[in-house]
Amino acid sequence: IVGGDACPPELVTRWAPDRRMTNAYGPTEATVAATISTPLTAGDPVPIGTPVINTRAYVLDSWLRPVPAGVAGELYVTGDGLARGYLNRPALTTERFLANPYGPPGTRMYRTGDIARWTPHGTLEFVGRADEQVKIRGFRIELGEIETVLGRHETVGQAVVVVRENEEGAKSLVAYVVPADGATVEVPRLRDALAARLPDHMMPAAFVVLEALPLTPHGKLDRKALPAPDFSPTDWTGPRTPQEEILCGLFAEVLGLETVGVHDSFFEVGGDSIMSMRLVTKVRATFGVRLSIRTIFEAPTVAELAGRLAGDTEGDTLDVLLPLRTTGDRAPLFCVHPAGGLSWVYSGLMKHIGADRPLYGIQARGLADPSATLPRSIEEMAADYVAQVRGVQPNGPYHLLGWSLGSLVVHAMATQLRAAGEEVGLLANLDQYPIDRGEPEPERLPDQQDALRIMLDFVGHDMDSLGDEPLEYAMVAEVLRERQSVFANLDESAIAALANVFANSRTLIGGFEPQPLDSDVLVLVAEPDETVSAAELAERAERWRPFVTGKIEYRVVRCTHAHMMQAEPAAEIGRVLAEKLGESK
Image (tube, rainbow, N blue to C red; front, side, top):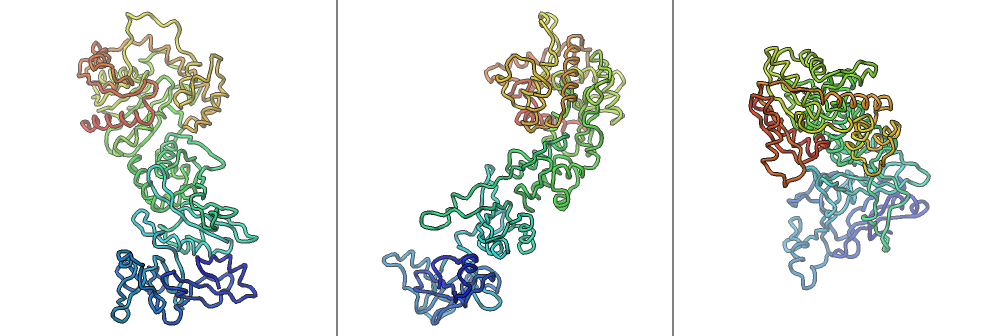
């Protein structure tokens, strides 16, 4: 006869053969045993049996009503073996020893704090402790129920389920299993077996296979020693397109992970059906596409899901016209590249600008085709880009955004569009100002090496570690892969093309003479130093006054110029743009 703690199935497998083994249950308050089982059989569920003589057991809900067979509830016991209460502790006695509504007047029943259920055959099964009942996303869950189902799988010897909470406060279920003797636990098969027997909200988000469960010196389970699940994939592949980068960020945000690769299944790195609802909501809001939870099940990886964003993933990601989001019925926002030539960086704005507005990036010539002739002036570049824009949107109003070099280009584009009789709506300048001809010319122009360093700085590499030696394309490619950014899949030839485009673009700045423009301009001034006066910040924006006859408005973004498209500054810029675009159709 065993008792004192829940009897695990593996103990029955080890002890029951050739013996008459029974399982006894009884809290100290109902000495000695309240229930006892019939002889146990290896491989069968382990019941706690039926009440002993002169004892009754009830499985009740929170209103003290009996629950049907198969439904878990709290176990109450009563009978001749029940104690009268706790000595000199009337409050605790009142809390735990309740008037028995199913017995003679004056009798009491003891609230055990254990969760149990009746089988259809009239025996009791122990499910777990009531204080181990958890509430996740609105569902009350008995961890013991999940452990019981896990324990019935032929490959599982021991099983424990706990709740873990990530940094965002999101709770998820984690199952720890020890293989049965001679068995191997295959997590996908175990997950499928559980899915056939448990509702979605009771499915563990992660499974951890252990050689043995950690125990305290007293032989009890040491829950604090259970290792955190490792969701890191063994074969990580970073995003290869702006859409994949955005989706990787959304996956990571919902799952509470630092990074998610494009081939990592949402459900194998910690997701469940409830989390998938949050993911669907975020994807809808970001991309403006109609998406169902079923799509997440059918396309659970970033790579697969990106293919479902109809129209958003067609074409080469280095082409001049880069569709970031093609859905929406409002006038698009066109974002022109900085000196590096890529517009992927603008993908961070998408979640902050309404899904009813399409977004397009304009990228430099010479990226998709390194042999292409590079533009010889900002005006030539602007004319090329105006043609690209009008191919998407034949008539205004046109909304244009540029960062750094791109700000000069959108000014030139706006003047060309106005000369053609078109309306310019929002013209947003991210921290770029006309060349001051009174200042001495720089000793040298930025070159390919500067471009490589800018790329490494953008992804957060330690710039002090680079030294003064020339950087090699292979080394830069390796660092970009290690940083797991959207640049991670650029090969050496693409990085070389970026460096050449950057060097050419920088030579064009000195020769650009802005033309007068009869439109309003929004200037977002990058300044991390909060002590800089408002007058000085306004003076920077007003440098455009000789070239702008409309209103010049400025906003301050607390960051450096080079970091304006990193997460926090991009969020602030996105909010400002959304506010200003709300005034335009």
